[in-house]
Length: 154
Image (cartoon, rainbow, N blue to C red; front, side, top):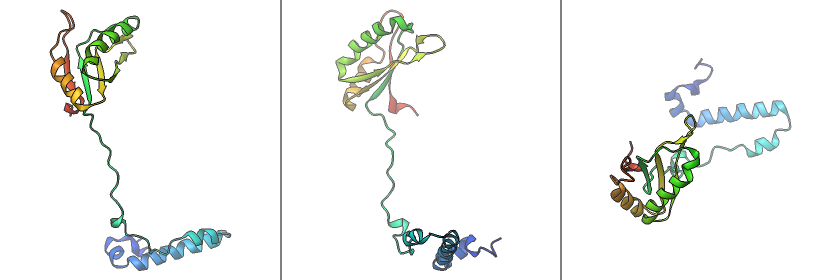
């Protein structure tokens, strides 16, 4: 109950913060002394004079954007034995726009490619150019590319 632990209510926590911290410290000291050989731990225990959490630097945020990555759909779905040939053809097409890395996923159930490739260029402007130029391009009579920048996905 909060009668035994007055620091459990928000109002008492705000108004009695120094008292609460001294009580918590005393509880920890008592517990450490009960187990013996706790002087090293007690020496390391803060007196509570540290920095306020609000004064610490803000947390690092993760950049979740992919400005230099495109997804090309509309590729043929080929079995593993034709993967290298398709990858070479796709390479000749996208390598014109700049240095890149390609990932062409395989469907484990069918053993064929998924009909798309994820291409990451070294530079955003290369990805922009490739997306603009390759979208709607025909590979052959049956296959035309649909190219979308990764950042355009929701």
